[in-house]
Length: 179
Image (cartoon, rainbow, N blue to C red; front, side):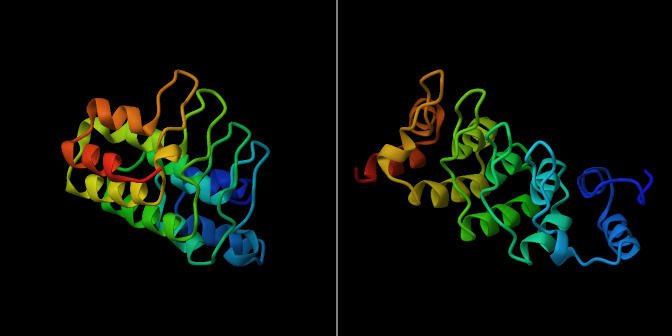
């Protein structure tokens, strides 16, 4: 990759934090100045990091308090971007930071109408372990029954997939929430 010619999104997608720092040095810029960059598809620099599992770079950007809830042309936000990549503890550290910064769990993408939390539930539903279960509980406790029942284009919701396929502990949590 030609760092001098590559844009920031390409660098964070295919490169390393060191590559990004090299690009910034070449352009005499600081990460603070580019933390909110958005490409032609509406994808933020942070979202590029999340999509490509560059959690070290994502962490550096998050420490600078970037804009959160940037919605791509496809209707995705940061939580959609990380939801398919929740296989490591580093991903959960970033996901908790996103929650603390106010990322929307209810943003619906355009193609299927899946909320960000639905995407996460769908991607991990068959692999519920203690870490995923605790994270889901935190997410669910931030929402109301109505919000958990937001349906996608196929008529499915977070509530419906948990009731159909989720562990009993989550089913009880869903039932205990007030309208």
